[in-house]
Image (cartoon, each protein chain N blue to C red):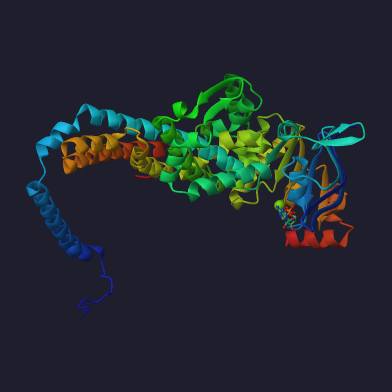
Length: 254
Length: 286
Ligand SMILES: Nc1ncnc2c1ncn2[C@@H]1O[C@H](COP(=O)(O)OP(=O)(O)O)[C@@H](O)[C@H]1O
Ligand SMILES: [Mg+2]
């Protein structure tokens, strides 16, 4: 059994505020984990620590077998520099709530930017891969559209393709459908469902409990910076043991 | 004073029976007349004043004037390039997480924005008084007076001063780009510097360009200050001619015409550039 993510007693503070309070989390290769929990419970912070948009203040995080942010040498931990952190980030792809496509580039250019600029792969090869990815997310006809010309759902699908173009080992989704009009949620979830079936390791922060039930191997419930409960989807979503989980689930469902 | 009722007519055909009377812009008409009158008076004064228009025509393409014009344009371009390069570098330093870089940038901006440009030009020009020689000991050395010719002193003075202003313009532009853009760039494996260059700066350009355009235009005129350190730009050369022939007004008009020509061309160029960087913004400004 190999882990794509291992977190041991992870602590993250913003000033005096403890956003992650000794979080332990293990995620296996190929697993799809949905994180649910009330706003402000630290879900985004956990994802951001995993791909080093935030630096942790305690504990340790391993992604794809590598200690995140440090190099171990003897009994010392050496902080990694900007370049090395950028290299470690290649293991993960991130999809944001607000898409964050590059507005000055077309859909295709958004997708090939990383492979060409970071991975230094040939433009021709990148272009072909990008067209395949666009087809996979159902946007073959939008290659030359700028983000402003796309709907929210289309933008988010391009953002997923952009992340996949880097061939990450793990995909992180931070409320990927929360900024979408209700009728556009389905198309994005469909792309994520396909991705999960293809065997990609995924961590998905979401309020879409239906999606979690159907797709997740495991659901994690967070509250106040802690993992309160974790287990199979039906366990957590239908028969939660913890009082706080129960309160949250019934609040979301009603 | 309302004589008609405001109830809508019962059918649209009724409305089409009315004749539309356009608004009268009496104010505009009146102010145009006043402006035309004043303009006429001004032209009259210049036409009847002690101005030899044939002299203006003759000197417009005089060798010394064209040479000066070339120097003005050259210096504007070079100083602006230096200013933009320094501006980008110092803006990035100013926003760095490295506090040493940050303070160096703040100090630079503080000093060069805080002292008059003419003083800075004189400082560079007279640098020999403090550093008689320049260079790296043992590798190469030169007497400062040989290096700090008017051209070099003007370029350093104007360019470095411009950099301090441009740094603030660039910083404003960088701040205008959503933080999510850095995060998206870093999430596809870019370093901070590469994110800046590939993702953030191109977007900041839309905010940066209009003020840079303005500053280029003001740089064209600011080069005239370099006449105090003997740089032979157009105004300096015009002055040299009127010291000899006493045709003060004529030569000032010659210089003025050329400044207007260059600035007008620049303004066109600025508009073209702004259009280019509006790519993907979903908006084309006219
Ligand atoms: N950059 C930050 N500075 C200060 N506080 C932050 C920052 N980011 C997040 N927080 C705080 O940390 C807590 C957890 O935030 P977050 O992980 O975004 O919650 P969630 O995604 O579960 O809604 C919140 O109380 C939030 O206000
Ligand atoms: Mg969040």
